[in-house]
Amino acid sequence: MKLDRILPFAKKLLKNVVKPGDRVVDATLGNGYDTLFLAELVGENGKVYGFDVQEEAIRATSARLKQHQLTDRVILFHQGHEQLSAVLPSEEKGKITGAVFNLGYLPGSDKTIVTRPETTKEAIEQLLEWMAPEGTIILVIYHGHVDGAIERDSLLQYCQQLDQKKAHVLQYQFINQQNNPPFIIAVEKR
Ligand code: SAH
Image (cartoon, rainbow, N blue to C red):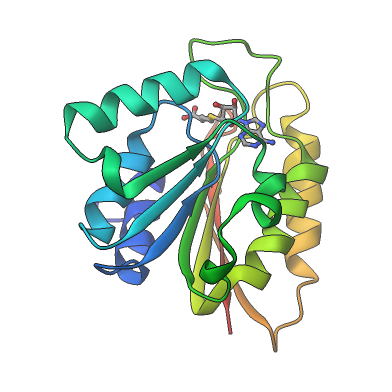
């Protein structure tokens, strides 16, 4: 298959926008794979700010970063991404070039701990304030779980109404696949 699958496409978008020295956000650490990817992209002079509400995600991500000796360029917050404005250093305002959300629950963990539409939207709203022009938010929307469809619909509605003078909004999705595969919404600040 020549078309990019969802996760490779998400990485391609991040790679397009994140350069050495950049400041970026991993809004849902999970197992830390994206955190590691972002830490590599920003290089030794960049910074990754990571959020998760689960201790387990913080632990898994820290271990992964340690393994690759990349802990210095990553700051982990054991807090919801909706706290972003409250905890990010103020000098980063207007400098964030990339952010990624993997929605839903952490595979192999408690399925009742899921991202929620209200807090996800709150975080996007804050990010749009903190990003540089052309800064891009990648949402990987998993919607097969309980309440997943509610979050999906709520986010689609929210993203569709974003003012086109303020953001470019893209949806990337295979539309003939079974079993609710994830899809992408990308929001580029103008
Ligand atoms: N569904 C994806 C993985 C999603 S992991 C997959 O299958 O690959 C989602 C992560 O978001 C979990 O680790 C969860 O703890 C975290 N999370 C839930 N609510 C959050 C919030 N408000 N802020 C930050 N992280 C949150």
